[in-house]
Image (cartoon, rainbow, N blue to C red; front, side, top):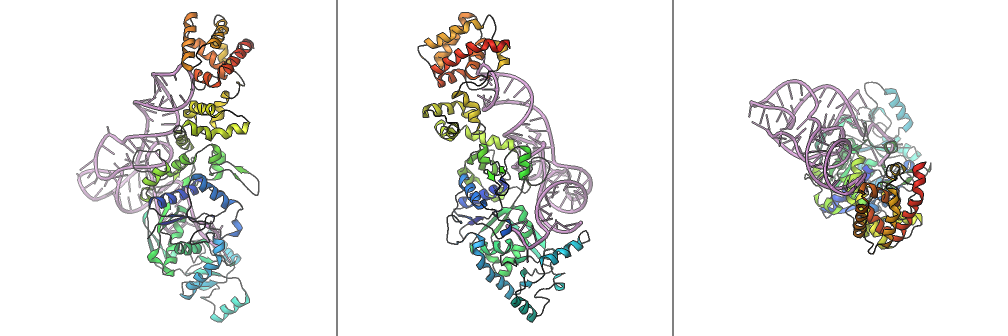
Length: 510
RNA sequence: GGCCCGUUCGUCUAGGGGUUAGGACGCUAGAUUUUCAUUCUAGUAACAGGGGUUCGAUUCCCCUACGGGCUACCA
C-alpha cells in the first residue's frame, strides 16, 4: 500500500508552530517513504471559520517548502479536499451506520443536554450521552419507529450518534506510545452528523481518511482521547483492516510555567508563535510570524523537527533533505517539549552563516529596498560577506550593516572621552592625509600604513584603532575596521574621517 | 471529579540492569579577534519520591506526587 499522509488543519486562525511541526512530520514521512502528502481542510464548523485562514495555511506550507501533492489548491484524485465541499458525501455513511445498528437518531436539543450537564456538575459523575443514559433520552432507540418517522417527516431537528458498545476494551497501537487501551463504557455516544447536516470532526475524519486511503494519521496528542471512538468507527464501517496507523505527537508547551504554548505566551515573552504575520480579520490586530521575525524556512523546520524528535546521533543541524532521510516516527518523544526561543535563534544563526554571500545578498536586499537604498551587487555581496557570521536574524543585517550605507548617526562619546586626548589626537590629521595618499587602497595596505604611522609616533593600537573605528562607524562594534574602510571606499572613508576631525573636540568637551 | 498520556541537567535531549549518565542551547571563565559578534577550550548542572524484582537499578514492575491532554451538535 502506497504511503499516504495528510495534514488536516481547521481554518480557524493562523497556524502556530505546533501545527507547522505536525505538517512537517507528515511531510517528512511522506517524502521518506516515497508517499503522498495531502492537505485537507477540516472546515466542518462554520461558526469557527475564519476568512483567510486557509490561504494562510497554504502560504505557510509554501514558505516552508512543504510541497503539497494533493489539496484544495492543487487538486488531486480525491477532490474536493475541503470538507465543507464534501458535505453531501457523509450522509450515506451515517445512514450505513444507522442501517447496521451502529448509530441512531437523537432528538434531544443542545439546550436540553446542556441543562442535564449543568445539573450533574460537581456530582460524582458528569452527564454523558452513553449506554447508561441513552435509554432515558429521546432517540430512535427509545421512541417507536412510527414516532421517529413522524418526527423526521415533521422536520424536527436531530443528530445522528454513534452507538458505542458497552463494556468493551478498545485497544490500539500508537506508533509513538505503544499499546493504548480505553474502556468503551467511558466513551460517549459521539455525534456523527450535526443537526445542520454537517459531519463532526470524528465522522468526517474517519470517512475521509478511509476514502483518501490514508495510511498514517499523525496528529497532536489532544486527539488521543478520541482515538478509541475513531477505532470504533472504523470497526462499525467494516474498515478495520485498512485502518491507518496512528501517531499522536507530544504537545509544544510554554517555555515557562506549564501548559500548551499559546499566542499570549509569545506576546508576553516576546517571540512569535505563528509561522507568518497574521492580521486578525475582526480586530485588525497583527501577530508576528517567524518569517517576518527574520527566520529562514530551513532552520525554522530544523528547529521544529527537534522539538520532540531527534535522530539519535549528535548531529543537530539538518537540511530538509537530511531530515527526510533521518526522520522516523519511532524516535518521536512521548513527553511534551517546552519551546525555547534561544535555541530557535541558534538554529537560525547557524544556518545564516552557511549561506554564500551572493545568496545572502539577495535575502537582505529587500531591507535596503525598503529604505530606498540602491547599491551594486558587488557592494552588497561584500557587505554580506562581512556580516554573515554576525547575524542571528536576517533583520539584523540593517542594524549591524547600516554604517556601510550611511554615515554614523551618532558617536560613542564615552569611548571618545577616553581616547581623543591631548598628545594623541594631534597626529590624526596626518593619518587622514596618509590614507588619502595611500597608493594601494586595500585592507592589507591600510593596516601596514596605520602600523607605520603608529610606530613613527609612538602610538599603540589602542590609541589609534578605536578612533578610526568611531570615525567610520560611530561605535566600538562591528566587523574589522580596515575591511569596512575598503568596502565603503576611500572617498567615503576620508569624508567620515574629516568629519570626525571636525566634531570630536566638541563632543569630548560637552 | 473521571479517563488517558507523560516525568533524565534551567531548556531540548542521548542512553538503558553494572556508564566518570553523553551532546546541544543558555550561563560562567579563558583563548583568538587590540572592538563587538563569530570561533575554539574549559566549567556549571539531571535520572520526581517511595516500595518492590535483582548480586546490582536511572533503566523493569507497582504506588504516590507532579505535569499535560480530553471530558461540546469545536476541531
